[in-house]
Amino acid sequence: MATIPTPHYFNAGDNPTFTDMNAWNDHVTWGITRKPAVLLYHPASSAVATTNPALLNSWAEWFDNDNMHTVAPNLYKITFQTAGLYQISARVVWLDQPAVLGPNNTFRIQVALNNAGSSVNLVSNTIFEDSRMVQYTSLNPFAFSFGFSDFYHATAGDTVEMWVLQTTGANRNVLGGAAPFGCTFSAHMVSTLT
Amino acid sequence: MATIPTPHTWTSLESTDETDMNNYTDCMNFLHFPPGAFLYRSTGINIPKNSTTLITWDQTYYDYDTCFAAANPSRLTIHTTGIYQITATATCQLASWGVNSDHWMGIAKNSAGAYPGSTNTNTIATDAKVISSTGTPTEAPPTNHIDIMTSLTSGDYIEMWLWYNSTFGALQRWFPGGVSAATRFFLSATFISQ
Image (cartoon, rainbow over all chains, first blue to last red):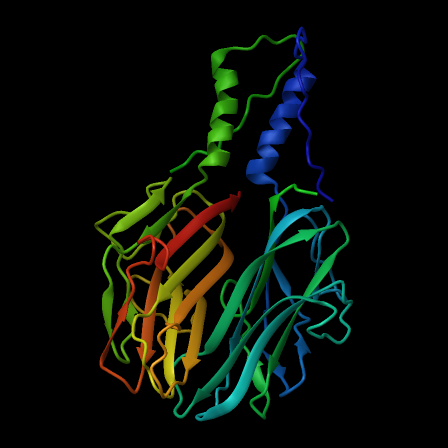
């Protein structure tokens, strides 16, 4: 857990000590260089079966300065170690698009809170979601992808995990590979608001 | 290039001077004006159907690190290494698009003006929307949006690409902006942490 430094508060007649002044150093440098941040990427493409939400569970770290992502079997989640307001971003790239899609084929991303990898639903454990209903009659040349970013006021110990859904009627792969392209999942502290 | 400020480290009984104290001013200024820029267009742009189009910019809403140069109007160039939040939005003006109208946005890094492809490692994020409509919706212009966190090195630059197809029209016009010209068609990057 990151320790958020607290600067000394000066009163009338105070003589600043070097300890007081160095506390100010910690305060300002923490804001510039040490605010908690994690960026995960999916190193390998992964098959997603039709209809049922799938947990993306093999994230690798591009960077992680607050031990928010750990080793197996916890590769699927981000754990907030330091309470605060975070911006969370999730993005997925779908491969293996069929030549004809639809009607009513849905692609979805869900970010679930404190869900421990259990089945996800839109009622009790999803804090953010974005859905696209897609129909087309000829294949376009680009991988279908989308994502979103949102704010969440996290308590130390809160976890988030990313689920994806597609209803095309067949398996589809999500794109993996070296960072920064493909599927990504990230969070960074915006404010120390608690 | 922005210099990431480092405050003076104090020792016992050391007296202050203006240089040491102004280091704190530098730190606070860095926090208030982090490296990054927000680029937008003062005019709309017509994009040919089925043609990946590199977007050029002619205005800056803000630019705290000389990220924009008219000599390379498609580029947002990073001059301070760090973790950045990148946001991009493009809103299309055509309100009637038909079945299988695909609107696609890509953000590429260091691609030298060449479209790298949605599964190429120079592409750091893509966003695609496939829209079907047989009528003429007046309140739903298709908008592509990207919001990601990524790590960038001094000298890296990012660019935006747009592509569309439609059963309507050979050109599609993209908004220069809404209430403010800088709100609906832009590319931005903001330093988050070192």
